[in-house]
Image 1: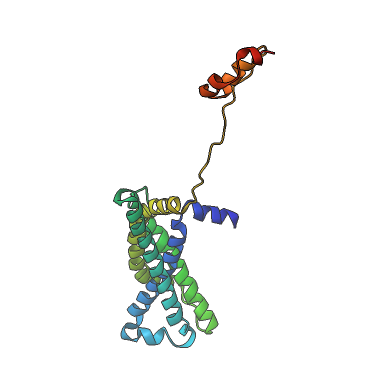
Image 2: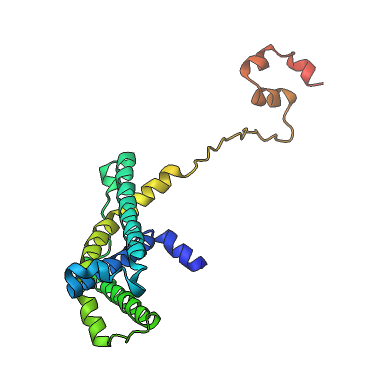
Length: 215
């Protein structure tokens, strides 16, 4: 758990990527069912063991949209605080095709797991692996591509924006230096020499005569 928290703190894009992937998988799920059932998609996705899907789809879509909007708001706020160059600093973000391959794989696994679990709970025949891959790919490919393009663009700017915001809200400590210079006293110095080194010149001039200080 500690390692995960450190990873998230070091790379704030991780949470954004996880939420976006889950949201995109549900979008791909809907696309697959639209290909299968056409205009009857909503009816198929809201009856029997699929009654949960409208609620889950709305929640997943809302979370994904909120995550994207939050990232864009952070980038815009960083631009206001530190200027365009710092707020939209382009870093070595995630590449589109690398993201696309990873997102598509994860989303296809989520789709296959959903369909298998739904069939088991509904006492229906479990779809074959080929059907799951083909139907899942039809829906997850466009959804993964959209998510990959969005994450790639945001990832190149989000890290710099978060760094600017962290620096802006970090408490600043004001250090006061109360050090007083002290002149070393050398053995054998007269009282007059010590007095003139540690006091203003005006005091040394107005003090008692040297003859009285030497006794």
